[in-house]
Image 1 (cartoon, rainbow, N blue to C red):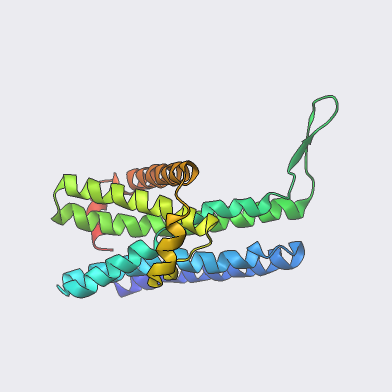
Image 2: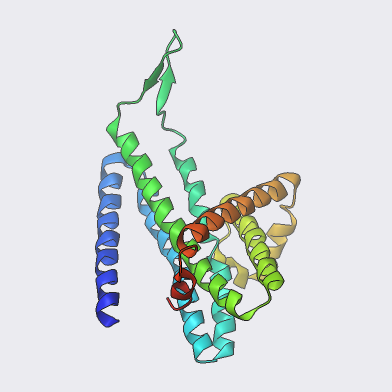
Length: 232
């Protein structure tokens, strides 16, 4: 078991170091700060995986107050994973193609622009996958212990809350820790409720639902996979 964990951890560490190096090089070449900022966003997106793992450990030890605290922290930081998708707006100044006068499509030959796209794409994939894996861990824990209707209800709540949290993060520039200043936090929220905020929140709730449904189908549909994820 120990050797298996070391075998898995080593390529993960190497991949993280390579991505950090990729981020630094991309920033130096493109002068776009998003290529450094995404490292912080990825750190926040990885925290739910830690909290989900701690939740499972404490549940096996039956330390329920720590389980409750970890679940709260998980929900607090989980939206940071799907939030990464919105970082593509930082590429809005880049034109990847143009239309000539004879309506021919001319693609950009600026390698640095494509480098920015690849870098953000990899970061979004890593962060989103980390978040979905953390949700899989908690989902499998709930499936073994709770009624199916309650499990689906909790998933629905996670989707809605996370979709709204992404709106708060992108448009109101609120962070997870701003919740610890409840008066200012809820005052900003009360002033931001609109048709757009509701529509945006539901749109990203749908995005999270679709991404998680796809990931769980791929990784949990195999024989015995549910048991493996439950013990991860």
